[in-house]
Image 1 (tube, helix red, strand yellow):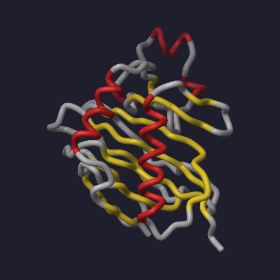
Image 2 (cartoon, helix red, strand yellow):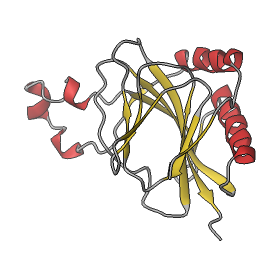
Image 3 (cartoon, rainbow, N blue to C red):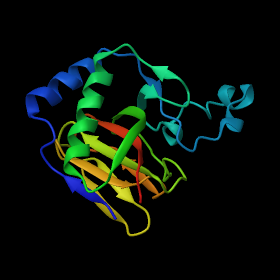
Length: 183
């Protein structure tokens, strides 16, 4: 159910992408976040800014449905990664729906989630560098560590979560959801 493909991009290019990521504006990740808990009382009680809801940081560089397209080299790199994966996988990619760049640090605390509910969508996680974080899949507790240049492809409705590094300073990756032809 999870396909891995190695050696998508060379180390030199992955390092350039990380350089661009370090110079972008980041937002807090919000997968499965209960926005009802964000109120004045909880902020005053310090229940909002704590490790329990620090799910890392994200940049949405492209989102078709939300009409987001950043004017950044990140989208060019994402398109190149998408095209290379499209050539190497069994899936018949039609178009990407979103590109999310993720930055986890040792205090990031993630939750299981589905990228989308639609069965005609495939997700991929592309790892920009090797670290002691990774991705775990709920149905079988399959943990796949972050390996530079490796991509994990899986149905978007498969529950998973990013695992923050504990020894490494950070974990950078690209998450894409794409439409595929299942015929």
